Amino acid sequence: MKTGVGPRGQQLPPELVQAIIAQLVPHATDPGGWTTLETIKAPGHWSNIQSCTLASKMLRGFSLAAWFRVLVLKEASDVAYCTEVLPLAVEQWTREILCLYADKQTVHDISGFKRLTRLYLDFTNEPRIWMIPFSNAPTSLTELHIGGHGWLTPMNLCAFTSSVPELRTLRMQLKRVWCHLCNLCNKIQFAGTIPESIIYEKGLGLPIHYANVLLTCRKLHTVVIAVAYTTDGSTTIGSSEKDNPNFWTGECDGCMSLMYKSDEFREKWVSSKKGIMYARPPALETVEWRFHPLMETSSTASDVSTSDVDGDDSGTASSAED
Image (cartoon, rainbow, N blue to C red; front, side):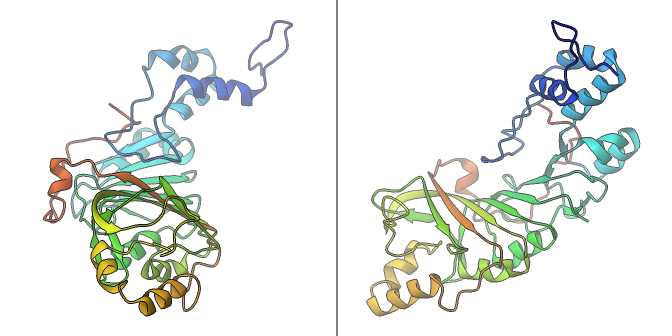
């Protein structure tokens, strides 16, 4: 089968043709960033690839695979609809899913997505919801993004991660961070110079209770935690990962101001976080904390009082739509 002809009649390899078509359908998801319903964009205009879908069976397959690589699930009936109308999208084409919390009864069965590798959970509008909006993760799923969560306790985190048995990469974008001293989720308050990120190696750097619940994730090797901070606190963490004497791993400003006054306590606590009495997932290599200034909005100002509010369920399943 001819895939494409060069200037001297040479055929282009299918992999190159597939890569060219993929460039015509640029999905706005960033493996190193954060994907939500607000940031994801449609894969361009259908007219960009319409001619490819009509040229040949192979080009049609490449085009549709690129178009449906990213899928947005909103309503409870979306998976059944896709399975009936677009079975190949479920079985072969979809690699990434943005799963939105709709209501307490909506759980998306994603077992049919045999080639799914990355799952985004968007809790931006429901920051304190603990319900898991998906079930039956396929073994191909290895990367989980939890975005916009405002109250991710260790037990909630365990519920999410235990639902992905082959988890290798975990990314969390949190409005509040679990403090393993007071056992509460708190906003982050810093003082002084704040680095863009701190990277811990050899499985260190997680809040101790997070590390404990992630022990069952036998293949987990990377954790990234992105948090917003204000500058009205007294906690300092240094200007780089090498200048971090307190080995900061999520402690709230109140606990550090009160308990770190005791040098004896501080030394014992830092030592415990560096390995003494500290369990960690067996394959965990890197823990990265990313910091960015808090942008006050109406949603960030009210996330503490947000209760289990049902989300807007007016959407439909689609490939990364406007």
